[in-house]
Image 1 (tube, rainbow, N blue to C red):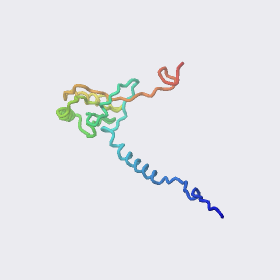
Image 2 (cartoon, helix red, strand yellow; image 1 turned 30 degrees about the vertical axis):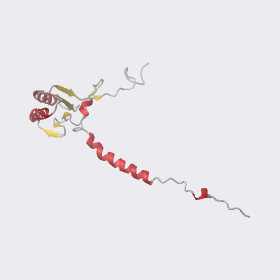
Image 3 (spheres, one colour; image 1 turned 90 degrees about the vertical axis):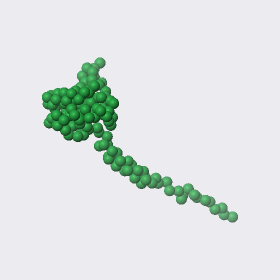
Image 4 (cartoon, one colour; image 1 turned 180 degrees about the vertical axis):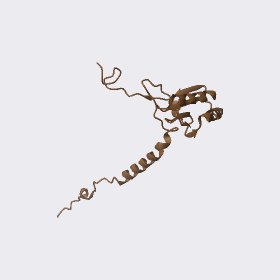
Length: 152
């Protein structure tokens, strides 16, 4: 009598099918590519760099009032380009419908000082309680006294 041996292990496919995982990753990549540009509030500006910036998390909220001053003196209220002389009225109109009376100014590091002062004056004329000037953290040079990795 001969015994028949079952060899089920020989029929198992040990290859991993990665096609569904690649499909999901491509869909996620496309979603992130579409959504990322919409996350910015207003226009992008090359902010001035300082050593100890104060954190202003409210400036990143969707309903925050952000005024941007570009290098050439162009002024944007959120993402709308407006003349400086119309800024006071625009801010007043927004203050009526908003309980937070803060305005944040994003000025380009190479913008003319007079253009930034004109924006601040117009915002103050609108009756703003608080005005925030947005800046970036300055990168510390290696070997500098306050830098990590340098010193004793």
